[in-house]
Amino acid sequence: MEERTLRYRILPEDLEADYWLQNPLADRLHFREVLSGSILWWIMMGLGIATSVLADQLFFAILFAVFLLNSMRGALTARRDYRKALAAQFSRSEVHEIQLDVSDLGLQEVDRGIESFAPWDKVLNFRNEVGLIRIHLANRLQALVPKRELEEEEVRFLLETLKEKGVPESAPEFP
Image (cartoon, rainbow, N blue to C red; front, side, top):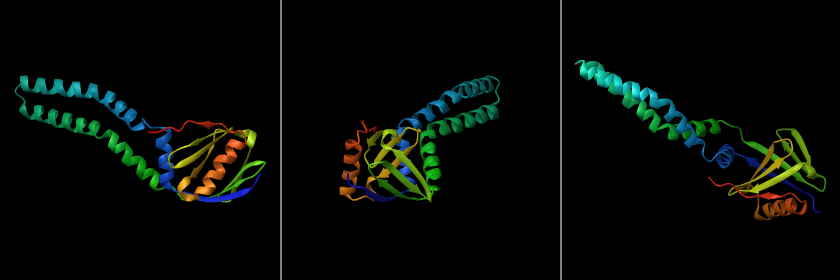
């Protein structure tokens, strides 16, 4: 087998894309949690408005209505706010300069001076995603390979080598 060294960078947007590939419903789940936590609050605000109106306390009725509307706005923007917060968090990530050595023995990755080696029997499977190749290892870690960083021939080499070494391909996940 031909041995080859692949060099690429993992950018913050690669990490974010990988997150969304693994958690395509995360923003919806967050919205449901916010919504379920808000319903009781909304009921209490509605009762406060009704009680204030019945007691001719217009000031308190308006105050309860403002709190209710503000709470509803927060719940309705929860998905967008979650995505924005996540994007901000990933934007602070460092760029990783990676060297991946593909050989008969397995995969050796060098990331910021730290070397990791996975023999072929410890490479569980791989996913050929839209912009990434995600290689799952037996220690529950993974190697991310952004396709845009490699030549087409290098991507083909990596995919063919994984298949040649008996690493099963999992179906890609799409958000």
